[in-house]
Length: 441
Image (tube, rainbow, N blue to C red; front, side, top):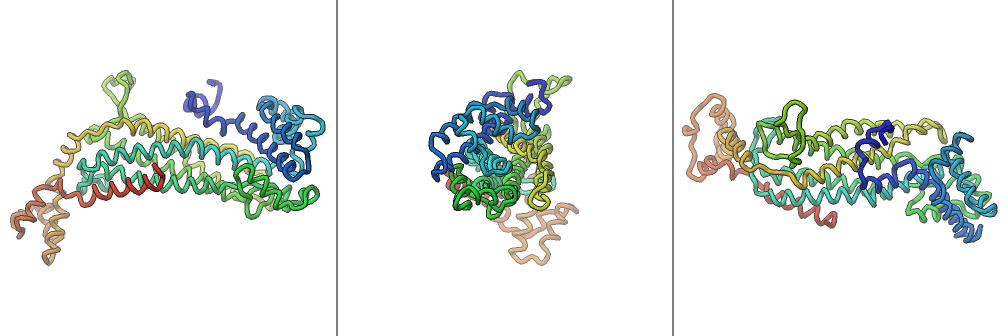
């Protein structure tokens, strides 16, 4: 473990629950799924009675017998990973079954289809359920704090009051939309079985209807064929999926950044719940740092730029070149980063401490300034010829507010700015209701 180069392995995925993710994204998982897809190809030949069901069963059982270690040993000998998988599978089946493995396929019929299948299952079984759990926590937090008045901030400065629930509702909406995009792009991942240049040359020698055969093969993997393929599946399906992962990670990073700043000493409106034994600094014993929020932002900084590689992988000369052969192997790390960020935020947001005394203090600090907008609106509504300038002079040039002609009801609004929260409460609840229904939470 500690001889690994990537921190993903020796630091961030070094916990028991990560095995569910590694089942799809590790090299052992990749090799298994390559073999699994090969077995489904043979199963499709059996489906059309080209080979006996016993042969398909035999090949299917071989998928549990090969290991990444033996595949890599074979690859050292022949210098081709996919053919090494096929050769290793062949060592675990009879001579009657062996010819059917990989028959008619080019390497990326299997590789592209395998990537689509394993990323789809990883999203459906691991990533999306975790994101739904985080969304559920955010909805509960927003509803709990929908009436908790907070000073709004624009440009890093106090603006007008909202509620803390309203603050969280922004991220419920943004995360909800990203979850939907991730669901859509997950379900739209595609596979293929169309041969060396995508024209079904070899398949036309083997089956009566190659296009129908391809569709049946992919249905066994809960996938659809690309509308058109060359030696590789059209790259935009995978690109859309990775973009959805990265843009979702961006929402989590923005939430983390906001919460991190609200934890600043001079603001102190929220606090991560940390262990009493946590060391915040090697030299300052009193420190309690927002380490979880900072960690999520740091993950985003590391993995967000990687989506540009996926965009560059859109370009492949003619029917295929090998310029994505190394870069595409790192796609799984993007998924892993989103998983790690979601898992971290789920834990910290579920136990977030909201300091209502600090919220009130900060609101009171801005009390004399935040009445500027309602004052301007009231005056303009009542026909003041230059309301904005009149209020500006009150706050910038220290003209007395008493000089303004306000009635008793208007003065009550000005005297109690904590009531000037607009539809923060209603909007928060509407957002929570919408996403609870939309995502069936």
